[in-house]
Length: 145
Image 1 (tube, one colour):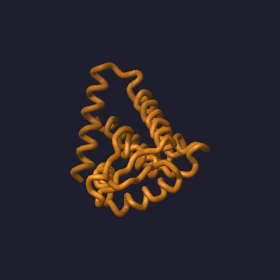
Image 2: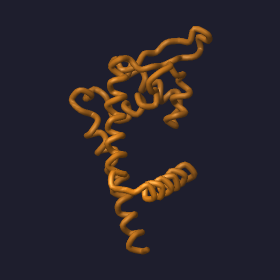
Image 3: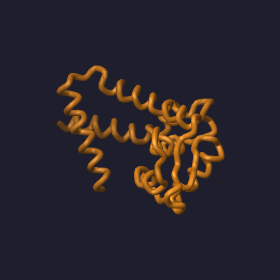
């Protein structure tokens, strides 16, 4: 068990140290060189479909509305996000992706799908279930830390 623990420790530490850099290199291609990896995660949080209010997107990202506002201002200027006031309540700001933003969303989604497929490609159903339990435990650890 000590050897398995040491291997997990080494893999997790290296993975956490490299994941943002790896993801940025994979998704911030020449077409998306005008945005950052963080911008791509804001685009992901906005999602496809109905416009969302700023506070719900901020909550999804675990940031303040003020922090999100800065990111949204930049994404609006770059043509990735639409921002409008709600017709029902002028205090509410609704955000949605432009066509350019939706294209970036699907580009990012494709990276995540390929990453997930590479993770489970050679695993049995039982191994996938064990991995899901282990990663859920890890997620819960970070959420409760």
